[in-house]
Length: 171
Image 1 (cartoon, rainbow, N blue to C red):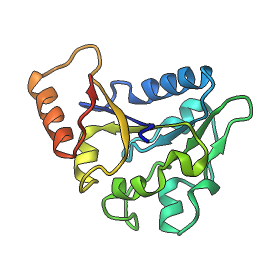
Image 2: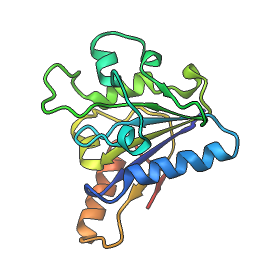
Image 3: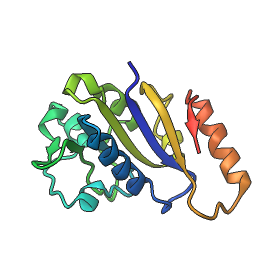
């Protein structure tokens, strides 16, 4: 079943991490176990936003052939857990098309989570790092910020997401 939510944006700095965290907390407040996945490859921020310390990221788990559940950070006082991503200067050694690899490990039922929320950062990253988005998404949230600078940018982002097979888009 579809119980993954993708949070992406038209550009950097409009609040995808804030939206992802708020959504995770709201869903968890209603009794669901939630896994947050930091998938903003150029600016991973969820660990810092949540005040958590990580040892390995999910990309390192894939690269080193470790089980992703070894790197999930479980918060003691919260039903929200985190699959972190470290800030990396260069992506040497990363698997090609990293979001295709994420789709293989982001199965909520495999890790006993009710919902997985993926903070992907700008949609442009999805386009360059995915051959086609193979995640089983319930919905995609497109965060635009207060002042959308260009209708053209919104239209291009929508078109790009549709080309990846994303159909349920909420702006």
